[in-house]
Amino acid sequence: MNSIEFNSITEAKEALDQKRLSVTELINLFFDLIKETDQNYHCFLELNYDSAIRQAQAIDQDFENKISKPLKGIPIALKDNIVTKGLRTTCGSKILQSWIPPYDATVVKKLKEAGAIVVGKTNMDEFAMGSSTEYSAFGPTKNPLDTSCVPGGSSGGSAAAIAASLSLGALGSDTGGSIRQPAAFCGVVGVKPTYGRVSRFGLVAFASSLDQIGPFARNVNDAALLLDVVSGNDPMDSTSLNVAATNFFKSLNSEVAGLKVGLIKELTDQCDQVVKETIQKLCDLLADYNVVISEISMPSLEYSLPAYYLIAPAEASSNLARFDGVRYGLRIDGSSAKDMMIKTRTEGFGNEVKRRIMLGTYVLSHGYYDAYYLKALKVRTLIKKEFEKAYQNYDLLICPTTPTLPFKLGERMADPVSMYLSDLCTIPSNLAGHPSISVPFGPKVKNFQVGIQVLANELDEQKMFNLAKFIEEADE
Image (tube, rainbow, N blue to C red; front, side, top):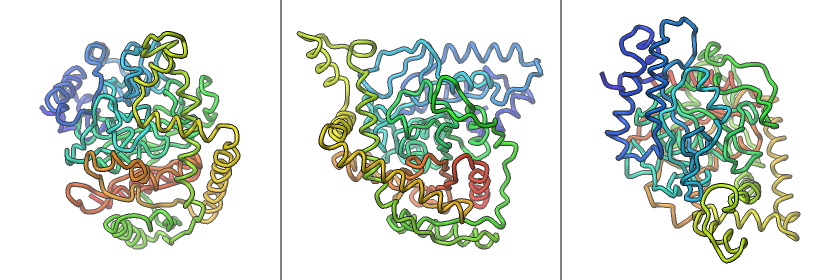
């Protein structure tokens, strides 16, 4: 039996329930496939074989226990900025290349409580700063759909692992599009939940007011199930929302008739022609199913990219100050404490991380705070108000997930601005704190489909999932 037979969590659960294979056999299938093929993609930085097999054997011994768990025996991959007790967590950086956390992130605890088995940690742009997974200190990940292309980033390892069938589900983090953009490039489903719906405790911070953990999956059903498992209030996270438990998976349907959906003009207009043509096909299809679809203008979104690249680096410069060679991670001795910190950070951080730390420190410095950072915060408020106004008239909004199809490895490494533009369509949801999902749609162009992004008002993930489910079914 080959693991490729399982295209979803639901299919694997059915096979386990019907005893067509054991959990240990299932997990071994995935590890065998990782060992055979991941050398072609470099999705994983660390495998969790011994612990995963022990957990699988324990589940098999107790499988007659009728206690239902939503992810019982299901293999899950984790982006390597989500801390895991006893399992190396590097954030794709030399400065943490030997760090083994003493605790689990809240989402990891929730996965384990749901019966999931962590198979390993996935590659990522260093400290989640990048859009191609080429900024990893341990080498780039390749797109399984075309290994000459990037998988997107910063959660490229997780997206590629799902696309290559090396895991049935995965978690990533999304600060400016780092789940949805690689999901679009790799032809899988990726979700950024409402800010605060999923605990950030145990997520190594990039930009704390923007970061959010979310799932990758092969289909919308699995993505909804994963989000149900990892959602919930957490007293360990002061930004965690105290809202009712979710049941997106059981409430999922693809009924869209009567919905009012807005196509965001400012984001769609800046996309390549093939992307525009694909989303127009979707708009025509939605109209055929009695969805009220119309173009909507949101002028403030023109400023979302520059606002983001002031706010995120500013927060990063503060968050990454803790990596100084004193408490944990890499330490390179020097003639003084200052010299030690300089040497440690110079050698430990990559060029992109250094670039963003310097930019963030600059915009927070005396004389520039009001001119740059404060103005960016005002733009963020303006964007959020514009979204709130839009949702008074529309149930959901749509736009492409990315302006282009995947680009070649190395193509944008010498031009950081062109790399930043990859997140043009995804950044607004992070600034507003609203949920959004990327789902593949339309005919393939050189192995790739266009990612369609569905955006919803805060805590309105159910409508978002339902429209995404319709798009998925229409594409079959």
